[in-house]
Image (cartoon, rainbow, N blue to C red; front, side, top):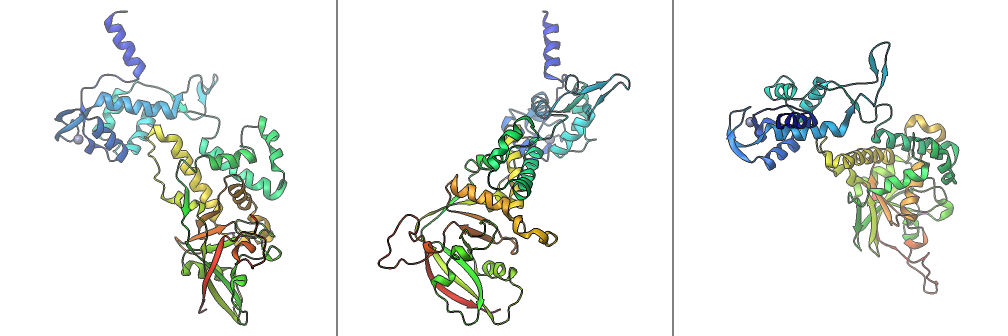
Length: 400
Ligand SMILES: [Zn+2]
């Protein structure tokens, strides 16, 4: 092959023609692109777009990066989309290079009519592209749909033996099976650093609204005995768990939210501490995670996972809608199963989640039952099951 031919084949492969211009970091608004230009800017020259004499990146290098982004999210329409021979058009959504440059301009934070966008339009070769999975759902939609289906399944179809769901989903790829869903939710928790360890002596605030004449002691303020354990966000009826918060105000709001009639009642907040370190899943950390930029294709998977976790956080901590009161008892089933999975499979001692009634407040459920909140009697036989895990410290009565 002659040199000229070889060169034009190379241009074709890379997807854009020649351009002899340079760009500086200030000429894009997007932080990720700015950083990318800055990191690779290897010549001190005049920026072709703003005229500044500074470290610049050659536009061909910048276009190489942009075409990588295009290739990550899009594929050629030919071979991936069906073609209607009668109408002479593809069946499904296609993008020409102007559509793509429009999307890139948005991501870069530059005007579609800017010199930069014009140069990209001119330099890119013509193409017809479509989404990577044109007739399916995105990974994020797939995950969200799978969670919705999981919630529906355990509420209305199969609650206790949903592991049998495996076979049903084997041929139908629209959803993850229930067990796959749980495994998927767990798969990135470690990587995204969503676990936290609460040191010995961490103070937990447990609030209760009690009759005025009830005497306050550790037994009254501990997790309920199993026969009084009600259906709750992270534990089913009959399973005793310790619900608390870290601040008095949050504890108060949480307690008042569940109680309508306050005549002859008092609000008591007790402090408990943990006697061992508590490994917890902290769902509130999801809200602090930095979402990788759309242009950062090396972290695109992480981006989708974080978006899914944000969705999950909302699903796990949102209040039960007033309109759902008809069958209130089953609304918590999906979160109860998730919590049980965390406890039994991930071996955590508790889950921290956002309060649904106090803005930015944090709640915690510790998987500690009634007996494990109490000081053992002298003659008690201590087993793993009834070993004391939380210790009652003090209480205060709060004005209603
Ligand atoms: Zn510039």
